[in-house]
Structure formats: C-alpha cells, structure tokens
Length: 124
Image 1 (cartoon, rainbow, N blue to C red):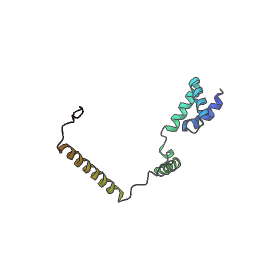
Image 2 (image 1 turned 90 degrees about the vertical axis):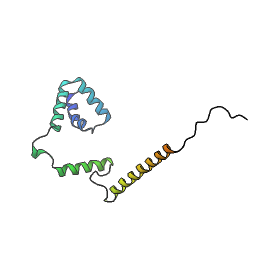
Image 3 (image 1 turned 135 degrees about the vertical axis):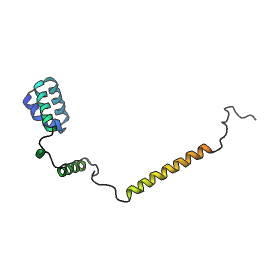
Image 4 (image 1 turned 120 degrees about the vertical axis):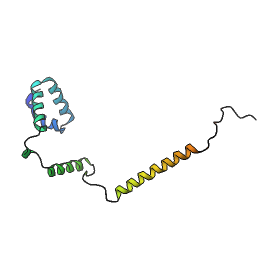
C-alpha cells in the first residue's frame, strides 16, 4: 500500500472519524510500515502534548466544545445541575428507603419463627 494514501488518513484515524474499511487498512499498514508508524506516533504526540499556554484553548472554549459534543452524541448537558429542590428530595427519598429496609430486616429478624416442616408426607 502506498504510504502517501495512509498519511492522508492518519489524522482522521487518530480522531476516530474514519470508516471501518479505512481503519482496517490504516491499522494493517501501520503494523507493516515502521516509517508510517513513526509518523503516526509523532502526530499523536504533537496533538496530545501541551503546547505553550497561549496555544491552549481557554476554559470557556473547552466548556463550549464539551457541551457541543455532549449534545451531538445525545447526552444531557453536563453543565445543567439539579434544581434547588431535587437534591434534598433525592436525599430524603434515599433516607426513607434505608429506614424502611432497616425496619423490614429488623422485623424479619425479631419475628418468632417456626421450625421447618418435614419433608415427609402427612400421615392420615
């Protein structure tokens, strides 16, 4: 396979924005071509390594990007927090469930029990 064709697909491969067929082709080529593998590793390092502070995105840009990605994949906006009344209500519900479980277990433990019935058929 021609290395020039693989070089074009390295960035989309890094971000996972590549078809399954192209991904398999790139991976197969990277296993057999040390030069392209070195290029891919260098590309990956340059994208993931922190650069100078002025080249890094601001916190606001990161938050906007995160929200856009979450919206794109269909998840709820991570910046949206619970309403003021939902948190205490959830804690109260959890406490009530725990209290009910404790009372139930205590009732079962302290109730008088019966001896197990024998497995023999009742005599007539």
